[in-house]
Image (cartoon, rainbow, N blue to C red):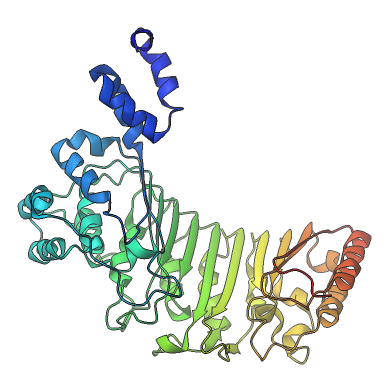
Length: 453
């Protein structure tokens, strides 16, 4: 230890940056100067999971940062992950955190001193041990975040987290006592699993939309509920996220994509997951995939978008896949002037069978700027799906035979086959490889299930 203390601080920083969290914790306990140097590394990255059987460490972290706010200022990334309570065998609500009255004293005192209108509800949820209330306390500390990830278990309830975000971003009239520094926050992910048991009367829309007002945000990944009634922004004026280049949205459906994409005038990558669960049916969450409304929303980013990923999934009900309807087509994708990478299900590009008119000319939905096309097998397990692999091959063959006329910059095609088993068997894949080789196009095939034949 004496030799370590004799090292220059620059060398110590190099050593400390390579140590594990456990080793950093040990260093902090052995000498005051080493603790001073090690604490910024120990607290820089906060990563928690959540298991029902164990007390959650978020409570001890909060007590430490409330006693010594400088520790909070060291925190650069927060990642709260885990899905213990969304597994198929789990039934019921997310459990509360068991915390003794003495452990709660400092947290309760902090919330009491804030000047927010929802203070009493916040205190009540802390007494109840609600995770949402504890995460809200964490996000009220003087963190200097660059990345924030809250997922699954941690984001099933979001009312207080959303309230803290809105207060911090929009309450300019007085000091409300919330101290999170948003200036360097570039990456944010607030995602959860769709839960059929969720109370559909409550929506997280107003809790997530504040992310678009973050001054430096570059990447947003969010599960956003469809609002009840018209879409409204949480402030008087819509946001202008000029640094936002990458956006991933789940849960929210086609009618509400347009106002979101309207403000993202610098967006380069967009990932949208269409999802349908018959148990969640409401006026917007229906079995219809409205491609006309989807492509209309995309028109707002036609001059900037370079990569588009479209996913389509259904919840399995009693081992049967629900029927879905496709309205319109993806042909307007052709008007996205900068698009170089495009990922979409065969079903959305070409319909559910060879008799669908969308199969006649695949190039009608592909922009001239396209370089890489990825086809997926989403919705292939629906009984409506009638494609045979040789039929899809014929469509690709017709397009690739003259692809230079429609997509002259094409460099590669990929098949991502997640659910198909006997479709796209080895012989047809070999035939497609031969075709791609002849026309000078690279082919990648990812098949998650083994061949049956």
